Each structure stands twice: as structure tokens, then as C-alpha cells.
Length: 281
Image 1 (tube, rainbow, N blue to C red):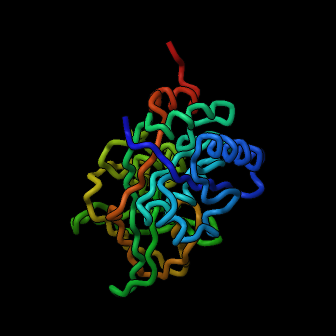
Image 2 (image 1 turned 90 degrees about the vertical axis):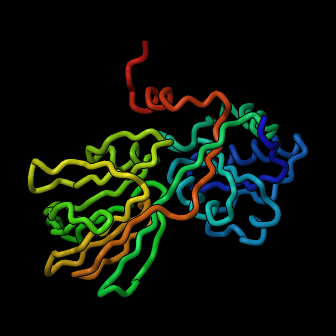
């Protein structure tokens, strides 16, 4: 049995249908179990660093995968595990449903599975000067500007030149993100335990352009060679940042990881069958 949880932060995204009701049910459940609930009905942006560092040993997120992604960035910095309650749509990361909250009771008592999910760090550099730095649990995406047009860029892995491409963009995805945006772009599904990164071109000019999977200890440099347009980079769909012409995107594994909590009965392949509509025997 794992270590039980005694201090829990409840976080939900405002405006999502059913979140408020589920937060109240969870709050009452936790209180009846003698759990110290330090936050309730609060967004990730409003969470206090002091509360998270000193008064919390588990964060429970109520919402969809987007809500969990938002909280994950905060949890990683404080080395706190995260449990997701699904009030969204697909829910690859939030795998407990509101009508199945008895699983939460078992988790609080120490009956759970903990996964470590690595993240990506991206640095936007211009003439070797750092412009901005970001972190992504799912994916880093290079996108065109406001107009629909192709970007030309060069890919380097561990300083080795791979290829030059003309495409609508490029997705660098973790295994966690392989069932998210990268999947719709034709990327491979990667098991969460794989130490790998997939590079998925978006609508490439050449039909021979295909996704490539590399070791997650690799260092990836994307040199932007497009002229007269300003592309953007997005991390987990949370924020879009302008990338200057002739800039370089420097991508590598982040030094911290996310602790993701699942019920003991968690089955990744069952999740794929349910979410993707695969046939069962």
C-alpha cells in the first residue's frame, strides 16, 4: 500500500458544467474522512504557493484534461501529485467519473498507482539570446501566424542535421500528449512509460515527410528559416508566443516530472478502447 493522503487541495475550472457540484460532493466526502481540505472552488492561477508548499500533499482537479494541464504546471514546481476527476470530454488524464467517487476514498487510503510523466522545456532564442522559456506536459507546437501558410524550418537532433521542411508547422509531443493534438495530426500513440519524443509535421509539403520518434534525452533545435512571416509557438494550447524570423526553438526534457495518480484498477489499454472507440473482445 502507498502512503495515504491527509491534506488535499481541490481545484476546479470556473464555468465548466457540473464542476461546482462535484467539488461540493468531494469536499463533503473528504471532510467526512477527516481529510484537511485546504482549497476548494479555486483556479490554478489563484492557488497560493505557500498553501501548496506547506499544507497540501495531493491536488485533486475537477474538469477536463485542459484543467489538469493547467494545474500540472503548478504541481510539477511543487512536486505534488495530481488526481483528475473527469468533467470534460475525452479525459485521458482525468480518469475518475463523478459517479464513481468511491475510488477517491480508496486512493486517499493509499490504494493507487502513481505514474511519472516527463515534460518538455522550450527556449525561444534569437542570435543565441534567450527570448522566452516555457514548459509543456503534452506538446510544443510551431504554428504559422495569422495567415494560413507554410513555414520553412530545419530540424537538428543532438546537433545533427535531420532535414529541412516546409509545412504548416511541427508538433513535438511527449507520450502523454500523443493522444491529444498530435494524434489528430497523424502522430503515433506512445505508451506513457516510454522515454520518447515524437516529432509530427503538420500538413507537410512533401508526402514523404513522416513523424519520427526519438529518445527523450535528445536535444532538439528547430531553426526557423521562413521569411516575411512571424510564426508562433504554443505549449499545451495554453498560450501562443510570437517567434521572430531567424529564431531557433531549443527543446529538451524538463528536469522535473509530474506525479499522476490513478486508481489501482487503472488500465491504460482499457482507457484507449473506451476513449477511441476501439473494438473489445
